[in-house]
Image 1: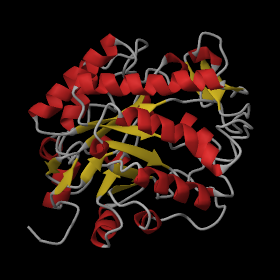
Image 2: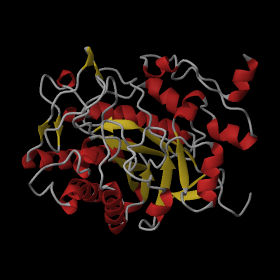
Image 3: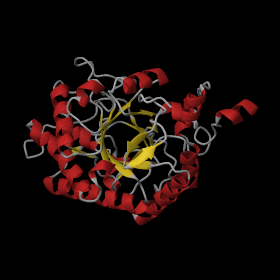
Length: 367
């Protein structure tokens, strides 16, 4: 093996040695059912992808108020915790570390998910975008209500309790989802946060909720096993603020001061770009964040190798390629062709089709 870092070289992460730097990105797949309990089908899906250096799970809601996706999993009750425990145990049998991504959808939700209650956000600002998929079909986005300070305090505790449950379930680490226009991203950006209290207005105040949640989780988990996901260039869920460079640089500096283990940056533009200036690149985060940096969004093997060789990233997460290539790192190592799924409509269906139906390369060749 080469002494120079590359996509298939080992790396120390979460206090353990990864066999490669090809990580599985969070992919919301909607197979948990209405009870949001991780199940055997999900376990099969994750185990199929056990050759990843590390797996970051699909976004997992920390409380009922955070729900905003049909049949996505949760970790706010005992049954859900036990469901995740079976998945963690199965992956550990294959010596694959697994990180849970903690999630609250905020305004990217609908009253259909919330027993008729309005979704919440930093401020009462509606998403300007396409309709949302709900249990009752497509619906127009609603104007959310702003969280009260008392509700913010409860939300922080819900994240902490989710982190406790994640430890009970046997996860190797936790990732705080502060990207893609969900609740923590809504507090972070000036476009969506127009509060006048301690959680809005100044940049310091807009950073406060992410900081307080991170600090609460650090009371449960060692710093090296905690990470945050950011999307500085993202437009998903109607995001993108003119002061994005200042905002995300300050966020990375703040997280560096907390000495968290990793920063997961959606630096690629495959998920959309707000075009408010030049894209923020990984090297800008490397200047202010000293621990592990993970790059994400639209990477190919070639661009991933380049990011690692240049020292901009330590790990690259792959999303869609892992759907139709459950053995993605093996294909990379053996220079095998990648499969491409032409029918993406089944990716968010309710059963095994488009989920666990993709074979590894050796089996696909025999079909």
